[in-house]
Image 1 (spheres, rainbow over the protein chains, first blue to last red):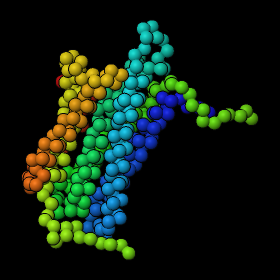
Image 2 (cartoon, chains in turn purple, brown):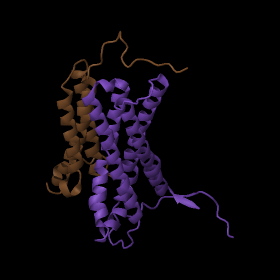
Image 3 (cartoon, rainbow over the protein chains, first blue to last red):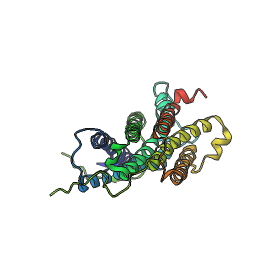
Image 4 (cartoon, one colour):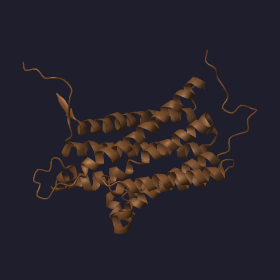
Length: 190
Length: 115
């Protein structure tokens, strides 16, 4: 059983960074609402607030790691130009998608939207983390600020969701292939 | 034993909102500039060429780098100006959220292709 370096990068980008971010984002939204809006907010302790700070910083790191690995590691492989006369486009995902009317939309709408909208996630969650760390539960006293913070956190989830959905579908129709093979386990014939 | 503490200890002055408002507005502005640059790069060969900072990634490298720079620069300036002030949070947040929603819409290819 083996995996190529490009496929491994795709897994790291999409599942480790992107997937984990999406999971964390839904949890953060609930917790931010509970701490700053809900009347049933838990008792304030240094330990719990410190946990939230670390949680939000980790989310910001995951979001930045996802967009940077996507843009600078995987996207160049995705948009690679095939040499003239290339018939087999399996190593050139963008061109492979564009070669068929059935799949061109995954590039012209999916990738074109994903490559830009994904960047709204780290920008938004960095701001959310900064404001929460700076103000904490004092956001309860700033109705407009906490509304804006919650909307940006939601927008971050939506942006990451759009990017994740299109990323998964594009990888289904035109996966990024190539690179050296990494042996995971040695197979045995039964 | 859990140690509870007040949200605002009585001997500390209440936090002004300027710091947060600066972060919120700059985030909206950063997203909007990124979306705007993406449209400009699609429609102008000159902008497209000048935004290729890293050839393997193409114009996306410039669009995102400039967007991030504008976001951080705006944040720094606004924070410096508003840090100790109380700002009209409702109005500024509304502007920031409008910029954010516009950014999401403007990056959607069927919309961005209209320009």
